[in-house]
View (cartoon, rainbow, N blue to C red):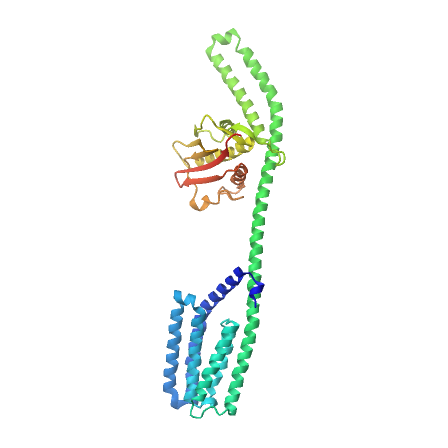
Length: 447
C-alpha cells in the first residue's frame, strides 16, 4: 500500500528502522507486562481467593516464559526475528488470561477485560503492522472461544459471551484502524526524514562546491594582485638593475679592478645580486600571471626550470634548509607552467613551515622525479614532523588547516589538488609521523 510511494531502498530502510524500534521497545513493554501480571495477584485475591495459589503459579510461569523470550530477543537470533518473538511473548499473556477464564466462570469471567486491553496496547505501543495486529486479534479471539467452549458451562451464546465477543471485536477493529493510520503516519515521517537527509546531503555538497569556488576566487584575486605588482616591479626594477649591471661591467674593465682582487670580488658579488633580482622579478611575473579558464594555454616546459623558479621565489622561506634534487635530464612535460610553479611553491612553503616546527639537526627538502610510462611523477619530501594519520585524508579539503588562526586559510593544497587534476594527474600525501612527509603528483609528457 505504501510501498508504491517509496523507492525499494527507502522501503527496506523503513522496515529496518521499524525492526530496530521494536528491538529496543519490546523488552521495555515486556517488563511492563510482567509488572502488570504481578499486580493482577490483587485481582485474584479479591475475585477468586480460592484460586489464588494456582493463579500465582500461572502468573509466574507466564512471566518466566516472557523473560525467556526477552533474553532470546537480545541475541543475534532475536535481532533477526524480533517481530515473531514480540508476537510470541504477547500471546503468552493472552493464553494465561484465557486459562484463567476457563478456570473460573468461563464467558462470565471478569478476566476477559485483559484480552482487549492487550490487543489495544499492542497496536498503539508496539507499532505492530496491520497484518500482525489482525492476526493477533484473531488468535486472541480463537483462544478465548476455545476457553469458553471447553468450560463446563459451555458457550451457550449467553449475554456474557456475546458481550465479551463484541468488546473483543470492537477493540480489535479500533486497534486495526488505528494501526492503519499509525502506519501511514510512520511512513510519512520516515519519508520526510529521508527527504530532509537527502536535501542536507545536497546542501552539504553545494556548500563544499561553494567553498572550493570561494577558494579559487580568493586565489585568483591574490594572483591578480601579485601579477599587477610583478608587472610594475619588472618595469620599475629592471631599468635600474640594468643600469647597475652596465656600470658594474664597465667598472670591471678598469685597470685598478684587475689588479685589486678584493675590489674585483665585490663587483662580482654585486653583479650576481643584480642578476638574482632579475631572475626573481621574472619568475614572479611568470607565476603570477593567471589566464582565465577560456584563455588558459598549455605548453611544453622543463620541470627543472619550474623547480628552479619556485625555489628562487621561496628563497627567504627555505634559508637554512638543505635542498637536494634528483630530476632526470629529460624533464620536458606539458601543461600550465605558471600553475605548476604555484603548486611547487605551495609544497616548498608547507615543507619549510613544518621543518620550522621541529628542531632538526639537518633540515632538508628533497625533490625527485621519475618517469612511469608517459607521466612524470614528482615527489617533494621533507624530514619534518610528518602528518597525523587522522589529518592525512583531509589535507586537500578546502579551508582545512592545522595552522594557528590567522596564519593560513587552508586553500593551498586544495587549489594545488585542482591544478594537478586539470593536468590529468593526482596529488597525494604520504607520511610517517615524527619522521617525514611527502607530496607526490604527476604531469603528462610533452606532446
